Amino acid sequence: MDSFCFAYALVVLISMLSNVHGKLINDVNQLGTNGCDLFQGSWVYDDSYPLYDSSVCPFIEKQFDCFKNGRPDKDYLKYRWQPNECNLPRFNAIEFQEKFKGKQIMFVGDSISLNQWQSLTCMLHAADPQAKYVSKRIGGTSIFTFPKYNTSYLLFRNAFLVDITTETNGTRVLMLDSLSSAAQWKDMDVLIFDSWHWWLHTGRKQPWDLVQDGNSTYKDGPRLTLYEKALNTWAKWVDSEVDTTKTKVFFQGVSPDHDNPTSSGSKTCEGVTQPLKSTEEVHQEELVLEEVLRGMNKSVYLLNITKLSQYRADGHPSVYGHGGHRDLDCTHWCLAGVVDTWNLFLNALLGL
Image (cartoon, rainbow, N blue to C red; front, side, top):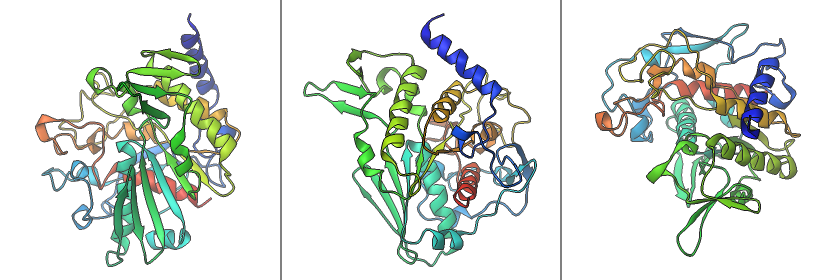
């Protein structure tokens, strides 16, 4: 057994022995004073949903606006997450804005982070549609502000967290131990990180030509191994540089896609209009993430959305995304929809 296989087997064993509950994952605590785990539950039909009308949220990206793109079914909007032992706190957008007056919340990651950032801004806008908002982009950072509340919600696009540099000859190098972007994250009041989907790209879509790992340079490697090394670089930065008494740090669990022909009883998300009744898929990348978080010294919160979102093959844009039938999207999520629930978890954890 090579070292990576042994390490992965160890991750699986530890995960089986120590259930992750999604509060302070490195302390393996449960969320809630009564020991309730918000992430264990089921999707229930609720006619009071969705939390907002996407047609009155004027800034939704075309790729997420399934209603505007012609999706005819509506049941996917009507499901609410119900924990087994308690209730998920309802979202009061005005209270949320007042609580974070003068503060900055930043999402850092790929287009799944964009998905969640847009969900949150729509939830806030829907509660006070007359409140002026300002949306701008500076370099790789999108900034959404509500001057009335003096709140800022930022999105920093960095799919790998670690750096990719371009040498003078055009060679792109994935720097597994370099995190230069972190200087722009450090002063936020809340950070929500996300990374996984771009690690899967190969061939023409692969965004690097070489990998730099300490003193070693090589062409490529097992993606789970590269992902784990990058996460460890990020974890060391948090442990050494972030004051978690001032900045709350979250890592979003891996967002499941449904474009795998063997995935959870559904060949793809196309034509799926109801939540799946069962899901058996194991996400190895989620196990790696959980193990890295367990090893950290600082308090980091896990938004443990992987398993509960795995049931929601119906929540993807499918053929009602930006590409229509030419580009089936079983990775991102319709807005309104599943991602709004992720923000309910964020709201609950921020209330602790």
